[in-house]
Image (cartoon, rainbow, N blue to C red; front, side, top):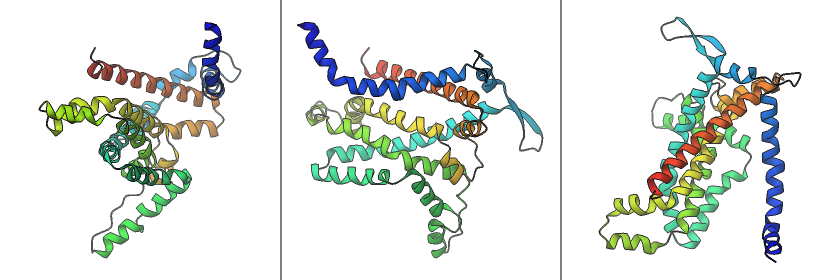
Length: 289
């Protein structure tokens, strides 16, 4: 009888489990397989070591040539832009999520719809739209020129890439936080104030710990696509900023599938380790352990 109940409880999860195996587990196995094999599909760690040891010469600011670890530099640049973009999304998304969660139900639906509308458009169209806005003769510089302000060169800079990342991935930050805050019991906030907490104390002691799962989910959903993006850097950065996603795409186009898989595998492992560390320390801090 108990076995029958357990089987009945598992049955609704079967479609999701099958989908996860086919479209998550199996592709990851293929990535790992290609990462640790050569062109003849013999086991090798050369693809992995190449990521950490490959070097190239670049010109320093003083004009001298310096030898650097090619892919480590690319990864460092990708991580820097992704972290900045994620921080900006969190800085803007957290208060916005709180405002939405405390608004009337009808207002919440309107705000959620407004946030999701850009996601209904194609990713490429949204990126091209920002190219039009940020270019030297774009909307922003036309407005500045109308007020007699000198135009600002934005397109082709790291700032443009960050703007594109923030715009494209901002909904992925705000929606998980909002979903947690919308379910938060307002009586807890009232109790905290009755016990003498000011507004900052309520935020620090009640709201933030309770919303932390949404924050972690939002950071994950923004950081991972930001660090692996390639189209935004190509269009808004004019191809001047070679990111780790560009490296994977370049190796794939050159038919170096095994090395492309190795880069993707290393990136995946690094991100999983980082997110695991973040989750561990946040649970230690706010989990009461």
